[in-house]
Image 1 (cartoon, protein in one colour):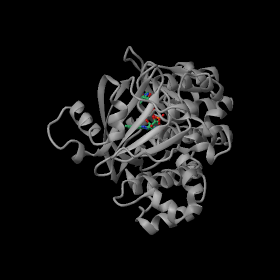
Image 2 (tube, helix red, strand yellow):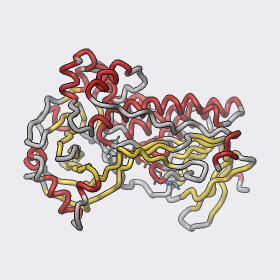
Image 3 (cartoon, helix red, strand yellow):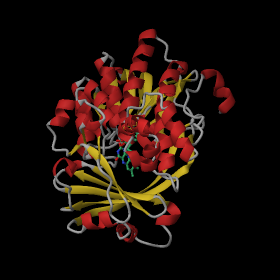
Length: 424
Ligand SMILES: Cc1cc2nc3c(=O)[nH]c(=O)nc-3n(C[C@H](O)[C@H](O)[C@H](O)COP(=O)(O)OP(=O)(O)OC[C@H]3O[C@@H](n4cnc5c(N)ncnc54)[C@H](O)[C@@H]3O)c2cc1C
């Protein structure tokens, strides 16, 4: 065993969840290795941040760097109906009197690279173009991973704790830990980029617009640096892919169905490829095993209509890292230590998930909800800006008077060692 392949913590994946957890752990003084299969900068979707992402970013020293960046400032989100009518922008600073109220629209290639460089500055050893290829287990406990660099030669990395931050790949997916789909949130997305498309003036230049198409489908319109906008359409698979069509045909067919999008794209020039992905929301059956914890999309993925993914990746990365730190200090990395972490993340995800559900529900209207219950506006805004560590009982009681809300998903708690024999 090479001595340089023994660590306190090995983190698999260098997206927002992996770089945040590894930075926090290095700041606690631990010896951390991060493995990333790609060479950064690499393309990634997920460009619109939420105000409450500010706090984990502040913790790892990213705010000043972001303030110096060329990323457009995001002050608000607005909604456009099919006939082009647009709601008054939802300005975050009207609710949150804190600098966090101004957030960013980011080019993920640059944002993720900044986060990874920041981890290096904090003392994390980062190995890019290195893929984790297998889990090492001893006596029922995870003790590290197998990895391979560009030369393809596999070697072992041993660590007291392993963090799976591998995103939707879920590197540790196994018969112990399945991905549990959320049947009602099964969508497809088709997206591309435009240069020179219309931007709203002043502080509205960097706002996200959510623009509706039939069958509760929607467009995102996210202004990026260099006069580029990211534009994508999300809807049921059967609605978008209703025949043998090219992605460009599907995309432009939907553009014709929303006047605001059509008018804003009229001056723009499309470039690059049309991307597609299935956006099936899920949660891991378990969030931890002895010696292992899952963060970010490896733990759970939620439909991106309210741009919650990067916030959840940053927050789960931070919370899991603090729990790992305590576990290492105590010399006990058993999965039960991660119960509070798992409960907190499931609670936060459930609040956002309820809003996502009702967004897709025919006949539900946030406008009507607020008109009937003006006193819940603050709670609704908190939920939408990522202030999710709150009791939202009053909000969801009011929502339930309009529309049924889903039961919480039962998945996501740690797998206890005593259960392993029963679930394998
Ligand atoms: C269509 C769409 C639109 C979205 N829009 C938004 C949005 O506007 N705002 C928002 O906040 N979120 C959005 N999201 C969600 C967002 O993309 C994710 O939630 C976020 O990227 C999760 O971060 P992460 O660090 O968990 O995973 P990722 O960012 O996916 O990072 C995982 C990393 O792990 C690496 N990796 C994977 N397997 C291995 C391995 N075996 N070994 C080594 N490295 C590995 C990958 O290369 C990758 O760099 C969107 C998602 C989709 C699908």
